[in-house]
Length: 65
Image (cartoon, rainbow, N blue to C red; front, top):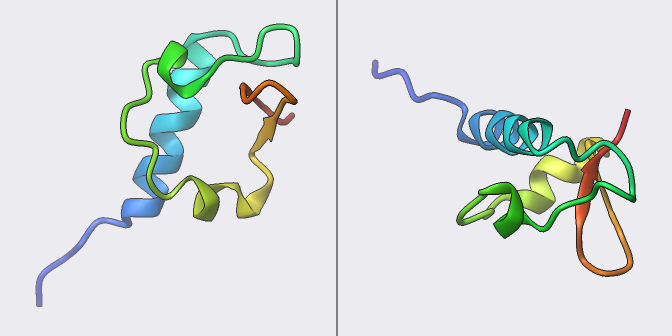
């Protein structure tokens, strides 16, 4: 039987890493996915079911502590 890595977990960790590297920890320092270097953020809705990210009014994101 083949092992398949948990893709949603990998995407979640990638998004968290990129936002951490961009210091997106509050509404004032929030970044768009493009600004944070996140390309193809497919699966975002699945990731955010755990309330990891907060979306600002202007479409930027930061990490929820």
